[in-house]
Image (cartoon, rainbow, N blue to C red; front, side, top):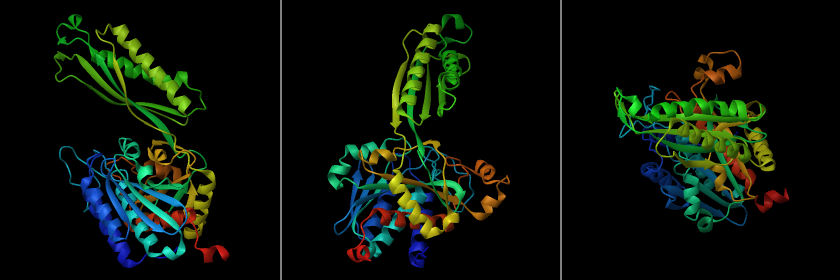
Length: 414
């Protein structure tokens, strides 16, 4: 693996620390987008901002050849950081915000890769499209960019690349041999009751009781309505109702997500959710039928096997076999696949983030035990090691892009 120039690594690290300290929620990524756009412009890219919200697109043309998209995300999460790092986020208005999923790392690595590719144009041909995508955490940003004419305005890509932080040892990358992340459906549910006094529950219809029954009954869907070999998850992550203990409210709200590795499985579980919610509301005598609305939907993330093999070979050549490993299907979800039109290959790999001390201190004697013990993505303790993860992420993206781009004519003859 070639060593990154010291001044570039210093600049990318400074960018990462700044992004981590100043996270922005989905749809509010104005500062983050401006920092990313400014970097790309200084690297020589033709930059357009405000695509699908705060989305950023940078184009670098270098002769005839494929158009390869490199994607990274702009947004952070409503999480209170507890890493204790000197550059930890202190953003707390109106809610605490943290880069708890590694999007700051993805952006900094994409910025570094963009600079490397711009400085080594003799090694490839084609066009590099670097995309800073907004609102990934709400699974709405990719579609927003498409609705704003991403492909019509900037070109239909021939390949789409992305990497994602994971609590593997920093310096490693991991590829899957099938789906990398699950498809998902997120639903919002409103249960309508009839409010009243806690002392006279017989005169009210308590939506809290109904919502609790819905939550408990939904747990049976995966156990009783899904084949044992089928991987499906149904999680109720939000239940809100009422303001005081002595007041029966007139509504309760639930937010839930379904994850799976096929559209058919997702549709079947969503149908069961509708059936159960309606039935429990009928059983409780709710005065108004429930409201069930689609909050988001994301496709299964299934990278192209042929291009993935080529990128994995490039990573192995860059890092050595010991630093390139496999990755099992994950129930996490992504809107990344939407950025690739039908038939366009994608490659998606995991980027290790855990520093040597963090890895050594994690309980367990096997890699699986340590992975289970390390703070995962979305944890307030998630803390990548930029010293090791950043140069790996930059080199991983550069070598992947070169594997998908065209070769100079002299290289083809040799």
